[in-house]
Image (cartoon, rainbow, N blue to C red):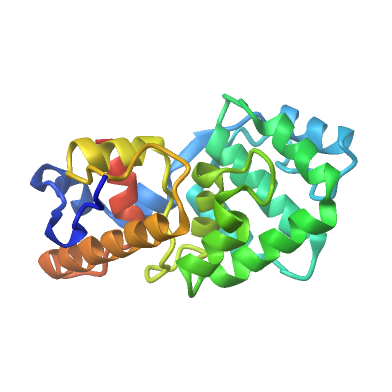
Length: 232
C-alpha cells in the first residue's frame, strides 16, 4: 500500500472542543487505577531493582505523577531507570496486566541490556523521536521482549517530563484506529510500526498542535492531540 500523504490530513473539527479544557485537567490529572500490590510483589519476586513501584495506599497513577518521576530520574541509576519503567507499565496497563509478568521476566533475563536500552531511549526522547524509538525498537524488533510500540512509546512520551514542546507521543492501536477511520491515514496499520512511521506520526501531531495552538491562542502539546485521538 502506498504511504498516505499526511500533508493533507486535518484533525476533525469535532475533536477541537476537548482542547478548550485546561491542559492540567486533561493531561496532568489524567489518572488510571493501578494494581499496586501486584506490581510491588512481582518486582520483589523477580529480584529486580525499582521497588516498591507504588507507595502503600496509592491506588492510581496520573500522567502528572509520571512527569514528576521523569523530572527526578537519574539516568545513571539502574534503580531509577527500572522504577520509571515499572510505573509507566503500571499506568499503561491499569488493571489488565496482560503481558506485564512477561515484560518483568524479560528484563530479569538481561538487566544490563534492558537498562542500557531504556537509558538511550530516555536520553534521546527529548530531542529525536527517531533515535528514541530505535533505542527500544531496533530494526523493527523489541529491544525488551513484549515491550512493543504501544508501551515503548509511553516510555518515550513520559521521558519528556510534561514539557509542552516534547516531540514524542504515545502511539497504540486505539490511536491508530482513530487516525485511520476518522482522519484518513489509510496506510498506518494497527501495530508493529517501523521507525519511519513513528516519526511521521510525531510530525503529524506536532503540526496539528501548532495549528490548534494558533487557533486557540495558546501553546498546545502533542499529548493533548493524542489523548483526543485515544478517546474519539
